[in-house]
Image (cartoon, rainbow, N blue to C red):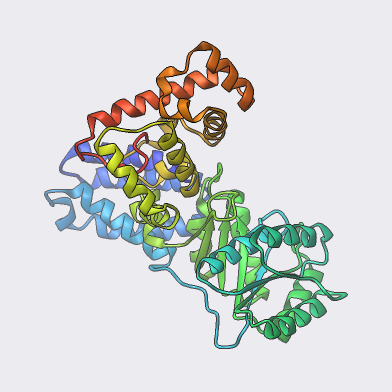
Length: 436
């Protein structure tokens, strides 16, 4: 997320840090470079102008320039102004007082609207809520089937009875009350482009059912287009919040810095991957930290605590202290990593790591291969990897659908990890993901 923008900003900060005391010329030159970096990241020009005017006004004050750490003062100012633009603090979902609460997701086709319905449902399930999905996008028949598949995966009901969206939602509310549902998440009509028919249908549905939340789903990879789409929807629809999807891809990220400022509506969630659990609550301060290369340890810790069985981790901790770590343990650690996210996502949250220069050895595909390889081993081989010779490697590779080279890579990674654990077996390093 924001790799290019973060890299550009970090290079600018590095030059400022090296200067010690700063002159007005130094600050103005740095702000010009920051302006260019933000514009290239597709941040709206009005947002860039307002942001840098505020930063400049505060950064050129005498107490900043003559500070013992002027660079840190300027970084702090920029960080605080970014938070201001992004919305100061997280805004949660309003479920209202009436049950079931009604949440509408609106947006264009291709934004990830239907998938996001399921991702929000997953979030509510984690909070012990009873959830139903509602297939209100009758314009695209594939959307109904997609929602059914997602509902089956989550083991929650999907309402689709009715000849049009108005009837489907009405029937869903009745069914939701009867089955004591807490939340109904409605996938509304979508189009490739904004048109009058779609807007009229949304207005009619909102007037009749008065949902507690109307969340606009925007594709974060579309940059300025996302801002333009948000403006057009906001002119006609009483949006209560925004969800930005696909922020894990090659998105330049400018939409995240623009839509809140342009529409005045809070960003409530961000999509950071394709998996159903890859939807994060939006925290302005955390995102600002990630943009500036300061990391996001809080989110990383929350993900670890939410996804890792701490009792199992404690048992592993004991084994690590004794430097006893076999391929069974390695296998469990690989599975735990996949629960938290990809290594790229994990590294993105750790401050001080140059993401553009680090290529994690264990990508998603590599982890899948490693898991398959270990699953093809005997218990004896997992407990004592040193016995794995050429003939065993050949059998393991054939059984896992991989190559001998893949098996060798796994063993190399394992033995490197084992050596690292031995070096830190006296408690100098956390056991969680010891090979990152």
